Image 1 (cartoon, rainbow, N blue to C red):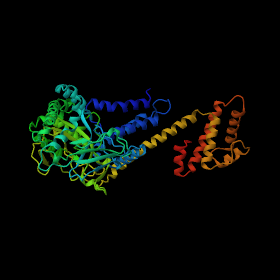
Image 2 (tube, rainbow, N blue to C red):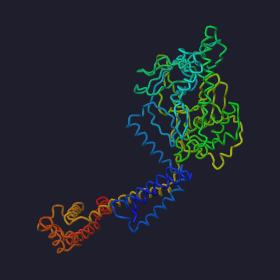
Image 3 (cartoon, rainbow, N blue to C red):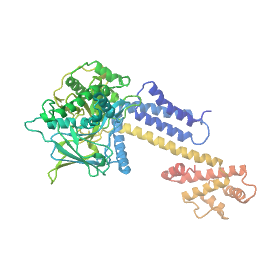
Length: 600
């Protein structure tokens, strides 16, 4: 006969696999309930090596029915059921980051979270500027290249620049290409002929703890100190986007040769960028591909407006959108199923849509620091403390004259979207009207609860709703599984008692006496032990106590050891005695007596 523990293990492992193979989205809460079923059933019947008991069928039906009932409840009321769980998850996350010492580490990568966003508020870096910025600073620390299954691989600009070098074929001067690429937009903008030249902003970035694992820098910048050897921060100079008015022909004669070199690097890179940064895994993003195909567009500004309008009308900002189902792409789940998410989801969706339209685009991540975060210092500089709440993700597109440029696609704190980049301005308050795509059918945009607010992104957190009945049901399920686990521990102890000899049984009996405060001054060797035991536990007669003591003494001091019949008699005495003690205890002590100690 198959053992129940192996049956429950195989079933718990097989159900999610079958669901994924059948292309059925599997949410985290049903999986958690399935896991609890597995643990509870294993604990209840799986301890020891005995086969499935007679009550297995009824137990399985009850647990399976509870599971099936919980599945639609958890699906239909996911947002309400998830809110308290999110708070607990947030507290656990903050505790872990604090205890692990990583809360203050500035770090970013290309992982598109399949779950919720939780922050600690810990300061991760301090930035100092020569004047107060008038625009939000985007400190980019990561740019994404290839996208696969919710992960952006780092953009391989080194390989792309190697191609640029091979095409330009500058010989010994090829080593100049890397430096020119990283600074040319800043340099050309600085050297242009201006009536009133713009003044760049100097920015010094200091990481908390003086560890510099990532390089964060603003757009249109030039590094003026080496970040790899930084001990007290590193410094850049950059232009704000309003001051970027690149006109490659409007430069003085003494800079014309350098302008030509920079322009050749720029044009060669621009020719290669579409092949490197328009790739999309179309087979895993069928609905996103369909959305782009049903809205054919060519003009970049129209494409940008359509993407922003799609995100504005197709999703709501939430830092607790829940967990994406297994077997489904996180971006498609964001845009076509949950209709809620935060910056990593908005940015990923925008980048993939740009690419589907043939626009070179990359996923960018780092920190967003608005002007209001800066405070004046006594030395005339402005300083801002950057916490993990400023961690952000956005899209960046390659513009013909300005290179990689940030495009903000996440709603602000009022739920509105306003986008500005050179030559383009867009606001959600002045929307073009697009015909809704069929890919959006079957679901409404949902306003999801927010865990907490970023300084400038995302709407305010709503008040939680009370769902006492549902939480009572889930609480009952949790208590049930705890009792099952405790009862499994008791069953295991009783099984061992069934196999114990008379001496072990007598030891457990003395332990039960001590727990109940009975005969605590005796150890079982006293001459009057049977008499006092019969007075304390009338359910066992004096004659039975005398016989039990004789059997135990013979087993302890005789040469033959305990006899099976003697063990069986002492076991009967033990059971009558512990039942009598159990009957006298208050209910709280009864729980400990039965489930904690396992005497009965």
